[in-house]
Image (cartoon, rainbow, N blue to C red):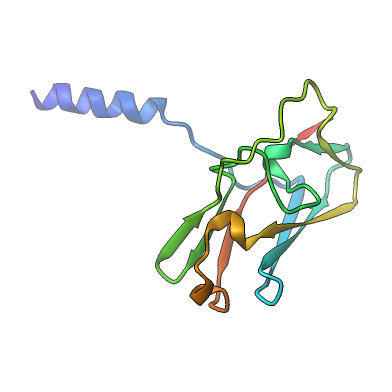
Length: 138
């Protein structure tokens, strides 16, 4: 019986997806701006190739990311606030909607606190934004 349990556990572990959150092709800098109730984010490319980010991995000009429930989380003390994944910018084929990052350049954006449902009494508290965009060569 123990063998069967171990076999099931091993099968589940081997099917789990491991996300590589380190990417030497770019760096991401985050600045908390409680005075504006948002995070300023900057992605700097270290790649010799152009990088692209899909709408679910980089905020638009209004501070929203499309259908992004696992893209970002804010931690305040012991509380965790995942980003709201209900926003959908629609469907796009190919790279037409991608944010393009030329080699060696930096792009900037904002992510609004309201996307995380941060209570107003925690706005001034120290926060950690766990944000790991995924880029691809395009």
